Length: 93
View (tube, rainbow, N blue to C red):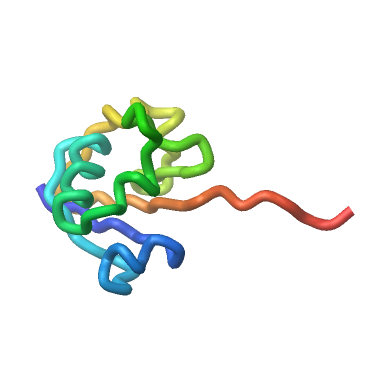
């Protein structure tokens, strides 16, 4: 099942400067492995050394945060849109 994955600018160096890629995956964990296979080095930017999604990386499936779904076991279906978004901190006082 093919899903569309939006890649943030800081990770596009791993996807040949593509802001959007397609991948076949059944869940988020499988998607990350597929991305790593197609774009070596991207997984270490998304996951920690234990293989868990880094706490400062937000992943959305059709605008739903996977942390409130089934995390990396969140199922994917054909046509889903996945957004990988690094958290941004800061602001003014």
